Amino acid sequence: MSFFFFFFYFHSVFAATLCEISAEIKFTIAVGRLFTYEVMRENFQSDFDSYSQKLYTGVLHNDPMIFKCNQQGYPDLPEWLRFIQRRPSENGFLYGTPTTPGKTFIEISLTEKMLPYQAEFFIELREVEKVLPSSVQSEIKQDLQKLWDNEALEIVNITNALDRGGRVPLPLAGHYEGVYVKVGSKKYFSRCLQRVMTPQYQRQCAGGDKVKVPGECHFCKIPSNCITWCKTKLFDRTKMEPAPPAPTMGSGILEDEGYFDPPESPPSRDYFPDYIVTVIVPLIIAVLLCLLLAYIMYGRREGVIQLYHQQTIHGNTEELRSMASQRAVPPPLSTLPMFNSRTGERASPLQSDSIPLIMAQQ
Image (cartoon, rainbow, N blue to C red; front, side, top):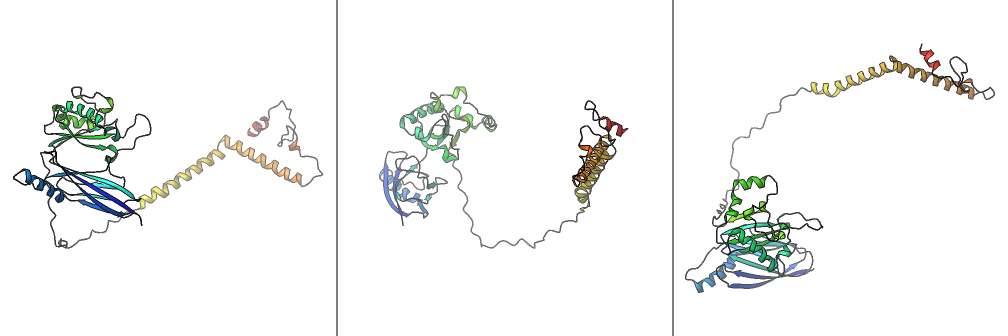
């Protein structure tokens, strides 16, 4: 049986200080078996409490925490491993099934006390590996500082657009995956960012048109760092979402709702009109078509001509068959050139062969 080796590195970071608490855990997982690991908030809270007791007289309890998981040296997790954490007040879970044996290092970072005001921007002409260098992050951060009108701005997260359900771009020049960049600050949003919360912004972006950044809010120096205005989102962390209510435990038996009265049978339906539409009407149309065809064949001049030609051909066929049985006789007159089978006369080649037909019609 093949095995997969895990090495977890935990980094607990205080937002108000530069202290870091690290730990290491090792796991051995069988290839092809489901792996789950619960990232417990209590474990990290104990580290925070033990450190805060040395600095402060009070002890912090039940602080909101956000976990960030990635493979060491990479911005994301391996393709077979997933991480989920619904709310900062809940634990997180790592889960997945390794497909090939090997060894990997997973880093779990924790941030406590989030920045109260955050904004997420979508950069269409970038890919995640091109944004991770510090020089590129500094360029993007400078543009967003001018947009926010705030120098104390920090990059909170960088996410690939494919992880948000984006489409894989075409392998052509000028097509990129796109990157979501989230920044935060202690200062409230600027006037330019407050436009995102206006009804006019909602109407413009709901129409599906590509809305440009307003002129007074456009601070993009490098075209590849320009944001998509309609995909800008604001987050006010000071307005905490209420926790969902705890589920109530019942007896496990459905409540009695009284006697069940089944519905009555459907009313009877007359299918005769449907029979007329599906059978009688097509039959009448077929009869009318037959009568029309008979009138054309027997009552019109064109029909009589066709019948005369058919009789002539039939008579010639019978004559050829009778002569074929008697090989000694001379060839039939109908085989001679310009022979009229009705009168038995031979016409000149210069004469039209339609004269006997016209005489027959008269």
